[in-house]
Image 1: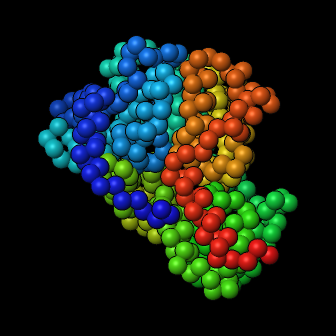
Image 2: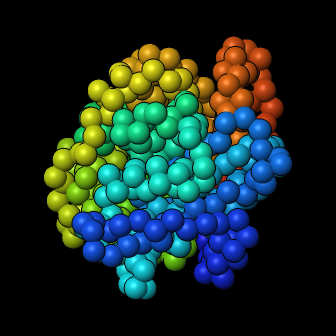
Length: 418
């Protein structure tokens, strides 16, 4: 549950989903005559059930597929009448191969090409304007889409937003260290003390990388008290078997392992490392998120600069910008979310207590509620105490919830309460 998830029959399931609710639009790989790729998109809600604006939903990554991993999200959206459109990112899953059946060249997989693919999908779907709803890396694409095709955007939903890896990095580092190294909030003081104590005995970069990954996974999944107990137990030689599984989970965003039709980071590496700077070097301090990318970055494209200035683009955006932020998000934490809201002319922050990174993945019911409200043009449904209470009542579902429950149970059984 806490490690990599086996997904038998993913190829068969992907083909089934394509046949049931998918379409393909053929897009150029580059200059005319340079080949094409069939970009797959899915729209599960039947025409008679659709209400409100269409919602173009863009998952994180780069490398996450849409068809297979988010089939249950789309099914729930359809039950609610939300007209969700999801696109299989070029170079991934059902959009991995060119029209001759070969893997796309990395040179054809760029942010600019993906953004234009999204516009072509809306054309193919007959959608003039949509709510553009991105999660994590998908928020970069959503904002880039709004900058390049502003006439197609009715509103933005930015779930765990990023503006710039390089530009956000100082805030991300400072937030992590304040909470979980310095103990800058009462709720994290004891966890931070335990992390510091174990960190003082961590003598190599590899061990600090492992500690950083475990802290991220455990805090986001289960919160500071479970993290404290786990770290104390590890310092006493307990729960050794659990530690590497959590380290692998916390470092999964830097994994180069390809799970076909689920997560395929290989062909999108030019975006992750070359365009967005995922491999920027660590600064030598504790709990640096760049530690988990350092090994992979050595064999990936060098950072050449970002293709969009999202800060400038966001300042120009006049549509509503709804930002979703979990209070346990260490990947794109609250200070980044607050900055996004402050830059937008019409920004609204929706906070999710007890939630980590990407509501689309870890709290799908909250993601669905926000998408539904924005599609209906009813932002008041997301404001104030009544909205907070409605969000708090939503059930927690999915693998992240099961993983959180399992982790809490394992740590509580395997460690003393003190």
